Image 1 (cartoon, rainbow, N blue to C red):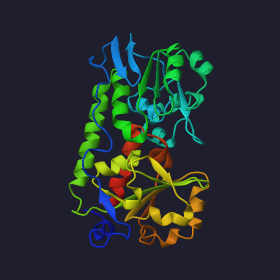
Image 2: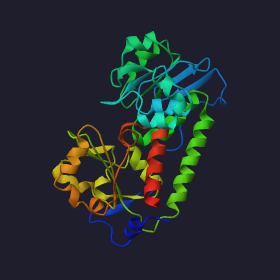
Image 3: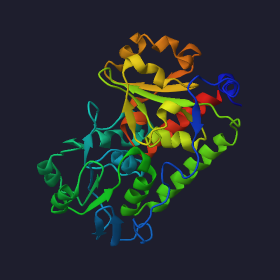
Image 4: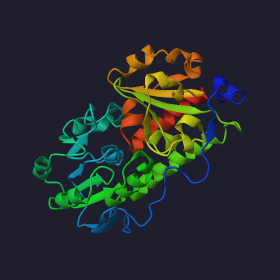
Length: 321
C-alpha cells in the first residue's frame, strides 16, 4: 500500500507542476550495433564498442576500469579489477559496494588507485599488466584510446548515467557474462514495473537534489536517478524536466528542488548548507517530512548496476511504507 503522504499527492500536489515521463525510455535498454555475438564464456571473442572492434583472445584475468560506474559493473559480475580511478573527493570504492559484496571487501582494498578518471596514471596502468581496459567516451576520447590500446585491449562504453544499462551489457559481454547482466536488468525492470502498476493515475513528483556545500544541483531526466524514476512511473517537478544530467542552482532558488518528495544527498559541507538555507524549511516536502537523505555515492556519483539497484530499492521502500 502506498504511503499516506504519497497518496495525498493525487489530490493536491505541489505548486510546481510535474510531468510524468512518456514516450521512449530515457535510459536505453538494448545494445544496438555493439557487443559480442559469442556465447557467454567463449573466447576468443570480438567486441564492437564506441571506438571500433576489439578482439579478446582469452577470458580477461586482470582488468582495469577507468570510467564512472565500471568498477561497480565489474564487481556486480563478481570480478574485482586490479586498478580503477576514483571520483572527486571519493574513495576508490564506495561504501555501498562493500555493503552489497562483503565477500569482495578485502580484494577491493587492494585495487590500485589510478588517479583522476579524466587523466589516469598511464605508467601505473602499464605496470599493472592488464589484459583488458575499460573506458568511456564521455570523458576520454580517441587519442587516449589509441594510447591505452598500446598497453592492452580496450573496450569503450558510452558513459553518463542515462546509459548505465547498455554500458553494463557491453562490459558484461566483453567479459563473457552477458546473460548474467541481462538477468539483472530483467529483474530490475520487473521490480520497477510491479511498483509502477500500483501507482495512482496522477503519480507523485520526485525531486533529486545534491549539494557539496560549494555546489548545489538538481538532477535531470537523463541522470541515473532520472531514468530510474521514469522506470518507476514517477513524475518530476517541471524545474527538473531538462534533458541533461544536472543543473546548478543557488540556495536562494532552492524552491526549484521542491516536489511531493525530495531525495537529497550531500557531501562535504552540503548537509549544513541545505539545513541552513533560508528556503529549506519552507519547501513543502521538508515541511511534510518527505525530504529523504540518501546515499550520495549511489545516487549521484556512480552509474553502475548496483548503484542503480540502491536507488531503485530506496525509492520503492520509502514510498511504499
